[in-house]
Image (tube, rainbow, N blue to C red):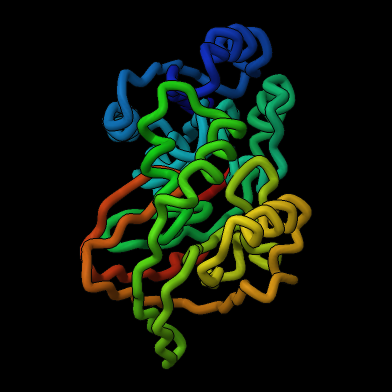
Length: 289
């Protein structure tokens, strides 16, 4: 019998977690799993719970939350035999959607009961990990403000994306990869493991989550009108048709700036040093889907 731990982020999903707990107790196959349910008290608590349960020989974790919750757990189980499942109740749920999961909680429990996994890549970013999409530029700028909101959600994110446009000033970066150097003042630099930010907004339609490659996506600095056009292209998976967009594949990328770099990692805002080293970890996560 496997030990499984559901780690719930109560701040995600506007109190939906109580309903999730009811369905776990009702639908989980207890002939297969010895289960435990843990509620995090804050962001840092998720990693503490994960580390503690690893010591208790738990070999299957389920993140009940959004991409940030998934990131916190996965960062502790990279390159191990421990599996990760997701019940997506967050704002974006990019990785869960990319792996074919939905917000139907009962369907997610069925997937957990089936216990089939796929090995996917992860990306090292200095001393952090990304499992979905990380970014520098406007998306990182928006993520900083979004993290300060009491209530989240797609509509709040869309509102901030347009509201903050006049406040954003692009900065110069030097990007080194594949023996190339690019000097750019971008609207966005996206570091992609999967295709989408979340909510089926596709930043890199050609990305494959298990191909052993980092997808580097660059969007040139743009106007409000350009952003409206890009938003439609994001939603319909046509961003790669824009003249403002370029994409490359690499195993290693270095990004340099004259200032410390504001970045988002799977939607969570972080401040990094002036140099960011990025590399791929092939098939380093066992994702139940």
